[in-house]
Length: 598
Image 1 (cartoon, rainbow, N blue to C red):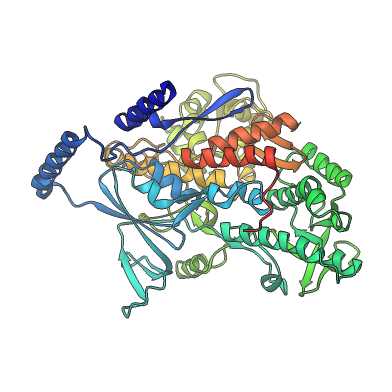
Image 2: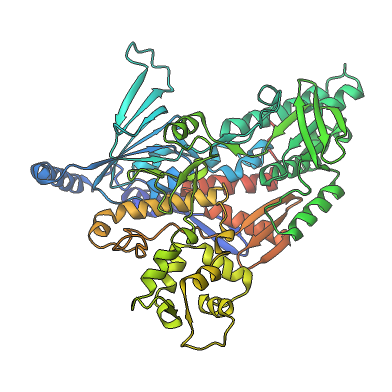
């Protein structure tokens, strides 16, 4: 009876004070407790909230009464609900905009965990957050339409969309949406390089549907190979899993599949375990080329010990329903190998909408939409692009070298002193980030030392350079320009940056905060976007992960796997998905992977 009274009082306390229900201890990770907060409604209809509801009604009346005095809100149309779009929506807090989200996918997917879904380590629903859950908590007027944009009309500030839901209506199939600002964040699609048979016979791993199809195919392969009327050769063909592409996605899937075979298949399918073969095909000389060489070498050696067949320099020339054909780079040797399933993970390319828009605006020869450092599509002040569909076209120093010299030469002497240049160094480094990269690679402390080195003179404050010497000192700076990687980390930072710009749009119109305009007068409205690399992980199976963090910090082992768990849990888009993902990891440790295939 005492216990019953205790739980009764506890239940009433949670009903009367909903904030208490927010605290949920999920797990203990990396020696410390990870605490998540469930997303509870502040208003749940319980007693004690009637007065609060009346107050809200009064506020609404006041808003209506004063609405005539409020200027018309600018309309922002956002295409896409991926990393860039989600980050923009979560960070936007300026109520002076009316935002309409258009996307055929009404949810956000935590894509770095897609490989974990393929073998039952994490459930698909655990890494998905409905987009309406995100927008309903905002104080900004945001609406959502489940539709696909099929055309962009920048001249009339319209987009044309097609509903992706079969509404069986007799209305127009395509509808138009007006905008004042357009944000394009539609991501990219798989690049097949026009290889014959890829679209018809391969699996991809870009969306949640792809992961679920792979998961079902993996389970079905083991079930089919367990049938008694098959020969060993037929079983080997069915259980030959081929991964094309040695990037992070392909490597992680191969590692997840290997762990599934060794941890779970050995118990559930004991008759076919020894027939499983995993082959990783990479066209270049190494897998994980974007990582440090120490990680690349360790991954290749570990896969060799685990029995994963890594074939470097192997280019796929064609795939039919039974065999995959390859050619060895260098000697041109051709082979054809039977397979059961192929995962194609070789890179990305623009979607049809982006291809058509690039042709329309004169960028047809590019691989992605070109934007300036403020993420504006080149040639348009009200169209922005971010994420995998776009690339920042960093302006070159040498294009503005004469103007930079003129700005720094305040006394119009025709020469530049070290003192004059020091006054403009910070502005140059902010406007042209390749300058800092060049100094780092040259192991030069600062720009002044670079100029002195170019002058070939003693380090004197009175040293002066003419325009030709100044050009010579900076002539190789632009060689350090690099495109940003097509990763979730980049898109996430771009979305947050763009939201910050929109939050401060009115303020920065009056008081620009960016660097000075070397061509023209005044300052740029905002600081340019700068990507800050926070590190990257490469799970290699066997509860081992390679971590490469800023500062040339590289580490590989079991402790890095726990760091991976902690980081990926903390980066979930909501506390709900944090709780689901962590509970999936705990379930897997206790009960193993889910092998239902659904």
